[in-house]
Length: 358
Image (cartoon, rainbow, N blue to C red; front, side, top):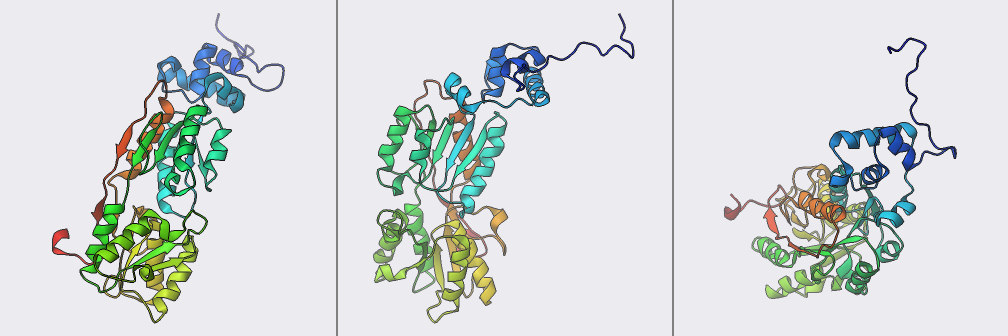
């Protein structure tokens, strides 16, 4: 019969008597099975078992209306999934990692996955006790027993791992092999063709095994310098405190001093950005007075005075995010895969144009 003004209609199912909405409450409110509600709200929304787009929307709407908050620990024990992706970056200073995390977040949210950043090197200790759907680990090659720790994680946890490593082969985890070693040699030769001395601006990595001079990027620079008969090669490495602000302050002193460089390779993108700002502050003309480039991609949003020349990987953020999120979404009986990224030169305004770049 038709409703009247005094007839409120069917009442929505109320939360359980415990005062906190449960998954069963959400399922009843949405008119779906408990299994379907679980699939939608546990980070498995891309599965066929989660139902149609309309069904998933009903479940999410019911969860929002009831104020349902999933118990991640219980969810992880039940499904083997924690509803999130861990980005083990080691630092927040590098815009490369920040940009990658933003891209992963955007893609992960479409699959009901959250994104968590680890800003230190304790990724092994964290992931041993965490319930993550996937983890992207960047510092494997530079920490003690890095490869062995990755293998232990893969064997003892349900986390899908994407290892950023030039030394490992895929096993029960994916490996992204993206080494700049040959790019550093090309970058050195490119600047050396126009300058008598080429310097490396590098961060202080004394907290890592071997320090800055033992890092593969530094070793590649030293090999390139020696190959051109330049040296002592170690004296061409200018080490500054780690961090964007620290690099900027040290860059001001370096560019204002008596030993001002004319050509610089920057160890990473954030250092190139800091050097660009320092050069502007002291009034140097780039690239006439100072020519420099970055080893590593630089997000356009972090540049202040025009695009910086760099060696990097084309469309790197979209490609990496697709690999990471795919590993989180589809982990059932899945073997590891090797993803090889080649480096190329992307000219900007911080290097002089050559015939080969026109």
